[in-house]
Image (cartoon, rainbow over all chains, first blue to last red; front, side, top):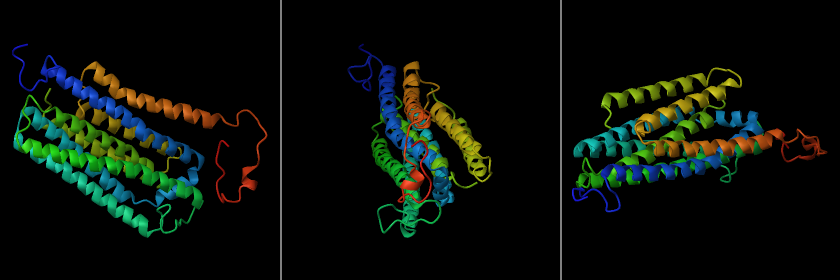
Length: 215
Length: 113
């Protein structure tokens, strides 16, 4: 016990045990997140099953190009995050800061495209409840349901991206101030888990929302 | 366990290839197969991200179990709820003809009601 390094909190025996506990805690949180988004996926499944034709019509109205580019942006940001965690494992400070900032930057590019898209939707009168919802083709009431689900799912996802950007930026500042070492980098690894999860959610949202009506 | 940078880049390349595949296939009419294939590709992408980016492959059994648990519960949610909606109407009951009596819904009549 006497050779415990300073990075190990007093309730843990070893650094490996501490690392495993932190990772496990994050995964428990992510399991609750799966079900948080799961309610919306359930709503999507039921509504699409009920009104398949109108759903495809409404989905066709979304900009698949912006959605696809945004998927690529998030996948790339996940690679940057994985490389940030690797830099942290090796205790390399400058690459860690750089990769964290690149991850946050790509997150902001994602939000930028999302804002552009929301603005297009606003101009096209397809935001339910604002400026009079108007949709041609299919049945307007059920198309409105699709757009409610679209805004709820992408909105909740965008909130998660925003939170991720804030946490990643904080991590970059901490890394810059030499708060991490090759022994002690749990916060970076756990932040990475959260960011990859947000990426996984989008991996499902893209085909379900944007590609449903293109064939 | 520290994975080589080239390995992460290969995983990312595979994810981009799967993105291109799902995007391209969306423009090909495969009938009801479209949704199944798109979801299959999304699951493959999620598994790649979890195994390698999130290090599930190199984690302990407990972490692996918890990582699967959330998705397992989601399947229960979707499975039980949809089996309810799907099986409504299997037992014949007297119900109103919604296509006539629901003038507000000018369009599709919901299934399973």
